[in-house]
Image 1: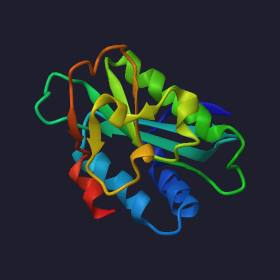
Image 2: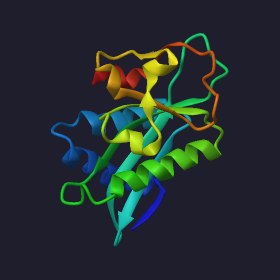
Image 3: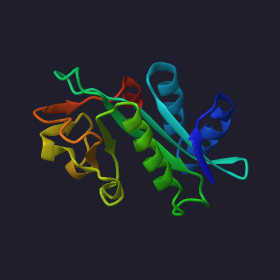
Image 4: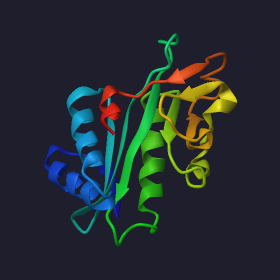
Length: 167
């Protein structure tokens, strides 16, 4: 298996990954909307024997009042059924965080399962005085500082791209 940047030719396969990994088309539609309206993006696929079996997308998020911060949000992450729980999602997450760090991103946010994301260094955002714009349990809104101290003194509510409002 290899992790690589998504290519234009992967779009149908990426849509298939999200459409089969989630109960409805919302996440697949979100990927399309973010491609069309958000930049920069970190979009990676997991390919095995020529088939795309997983995908992760990182898109810009903001913390109002702190335009100097370089922030991304991790979402969505999907692996085709039958290949889930085999380390593909973890490999995509690690590679995406590395790519974000290499591009100068200081912190990454995720709204996700509190038992899954801490293995990558994510911790509750409210510890930093940062809230989530979505109605979700506080322990599901997490962040990881890729540059230690990047969020020092920054508080507020993280804002995701408007495409997330459709979810």
